[in-house]
Amino acid sequence: MSYISDVLEQLNKNNPNEPEFIQATTEVLESIAPVVDANPRFQDWALLERLVEPERVNIFRIPWVDDAGKTHVNRAYRVQFNSAIGPYKGGIRFHPSVNLSIIKFLGFEQTFKNSLTGLPMGGGKGGCDFDPKGKSDTEIMRFCQSFMTSLYRIIGPRVDVPAGDIGVGAREVGYMYGQYKRITGVYEGVLTGKGLSYGGSLARTEATGYGLIYLTQEMLNDHNDSIEGKTIVVSGSGNVATYAIEKATQLGGKCVTASDSSGYVYDPDGIDLDVLKDVKQVRRARINEYVNARPNAKFHAGKRVWEVPCDIALPCATQNELDVNDAKELVKNGCKVVAEGANMPSTLEATKVFLENKLLFAPGKAANAGGVATSGLEMTQNTQGLSWSFEEVDTKLCGIMKNIYGNMADAAKEYNAKDNFVVGANAAGFLKVADAMMAQGII
Ligand code: NDP
Image (cartoon, rainbow, N blue to C red; front, side, top):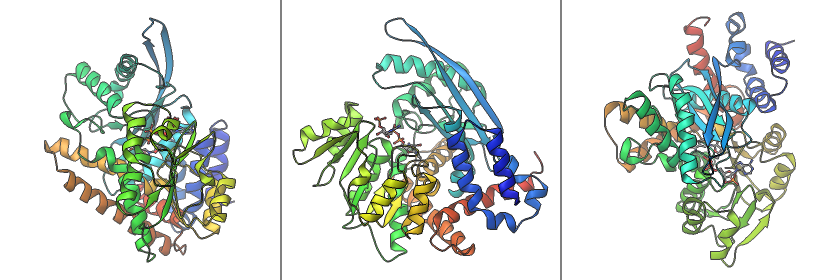
């Protein structure tokens, strides 16, 4: 049996109740076989065994009191996955579905994503099974303060730098930052995604969605095509989806859908961003309210966007939101490009369908790396005590996304898998981490 299948077999035995983590590790390990085969020392030094085991897993309780005086307890995680190339870096997710498997898969993916950005950041991820929906602002604040009261002991600007993710945006980062400062008495860049008035970076809010579109445009340009005139289907209506729609529209694409967990809206005239932002960012309402202001738009309750014919599909909501049947339907309806704004939104079987049908498929760890890359730029600005202009950050972001595309395309060619960007992104991300781990010895 090969080294990779041995490691995967043991991984399945060790983590029987962690399907998302097994899915993410299987995808990476199977795709880097040619790189591993070419380096026998990896096996001698148990590199893959170490790569799939987090350096540290923290699990802690979050007690908090709601507005009615009732006490609640949630379970929180911070997985410090890999620090070979820099301090742990990765977001915090608040969603009722959060569990150890999900946080471990996200931390594992983050390790390769951060490596792809070219910046010195290791991989980590955190979260809590807290549901922010329907909570008052003061409940959110008390929850965030309690969360940080436990988290502050294990993070720091040179140790572990969290950021936002699903359910954690500027408001939550602000409350957490305030509590960190209050407890430690230190004003330092311990979180990214901060507000502009206290050390945040311009363009961080837009970065993941904009970055997704910069990489998609670069991939299309490399194939003598562009976003202009394309019909685009987008899932989600949060941070990533909103700014992906904004940039794609600026580049001449027409985004016709947005969704949340209640269903999706189809707008034949193209999603109106002012209306979407009002519904989602200002009023924090459900997506069906979008159609009140857009008479031509229709709401489809409980449905997924993938049934809508398109040229380009951008999954920007959550993991495993696009399965094998969705993938087949997209292909049947003529979709030619899929770029993942969310983390692992396509199942392993869906990804296979895209690759077999020769779609241009950009996996999340490359396509959505613009957010963490710009967090890296925020860390640099904090260290230097500077704040760069929007244009400066946006230009750097665009350059980083073009580089990521170039590196994954080159790696795909080098391993005889031209245009297979799953192989390309995994191989390129892996090599730097592997090199650093080997250089630092068996630790
Ligand atoms: P937000 O919380 O801003 O938005 C999440 C969106 O996805 C909402 O529309 C939400 O709908 C929907 N969603 C979440 N969970 C589910 C679910 N189980 N079923 C259906 N819809 C769901 O999060 P982000 O936009 O920040 O994150 C979206 C994705 O992008 C995630 O996979 C995240 O890990 C990834 N990502 C985010 C980055 C960032 O910078 N923010 C960076 C890189 C990746 P509802 O409100 O109904 O739950």
